[in-house]
Length: 377
Image (cartoon, rainbow, N blue to C red; front, side, top):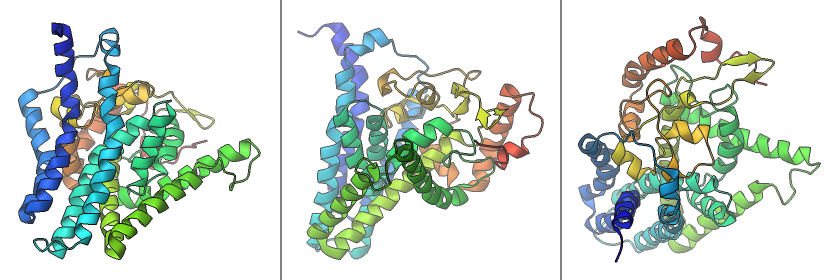
């Protein structure tokens, strides 16, 4: 018989597996077609924020000693998701390539977009967790997930650029104060790839190796992405490739909405000579809304993730308002606000100004920070 402590811990783990419910739901809406396809958006963008209202915020920090014995069961969801997503993506493409009579061309596109909601909100998020682990298997699984959305360079950009330069002008994905998402999105699509390429080129140069050396991960990224596109073509021809690209675009859109939210308007204090202060919890927006953290495996405890990037998701800590700035809602609601720049600025700009007064009262002129005029090293 299981002891009461085991049952209690199991009850804590199960909610983080909720993403698996999206797989049968995707299969069902594929059969139903029509307006039912919106159920994917309704569940991910609307249901979980509604559950946040029911369950509230979880301000408790996990006991590392108590959780450590169950870490495998927390991490297992990120391990098994990759093959499930692979079957989901290419199974859908193969099915739609048969042109089922009950689905129109528009429904094909809508289903691919709905699939992108899942591969973006869940798949890329799980790849983010996996790429931070030292285990080679987990990092390889992260690469496969990113190749399925044609965004493999995100691994380099996130680990080698973002975590080092977050909240400085050298980090493309730190959204500037007053920068609307409609400007942020096309900017990061270009700058993230460039910054990742420059980072790998710099690492190879320091080792005295040419860009085309086999250790350049961009070779692996290209091969994996080409294999994914090739498989989509084999299963569905040109139409299959188009559906795959639609899915990938929607997934990347979800990633960059998240990036936009996580550090909007926050900057590290400039210390001169191209240097900035060390990353602290108050350099990321934090959210401890319970239900959306189940779906996003604690990604919203982002302040601690940047403070301790090596910490696995069930051990991420939350902070009070004095230690880290708090979002008024979970990421899905904040994402809806981000898509409406005037509404976003009305909600978030006063919070950024309060953050500046609370953490950096000595800085009187924020123009150099806002416009990225400071030397970034």
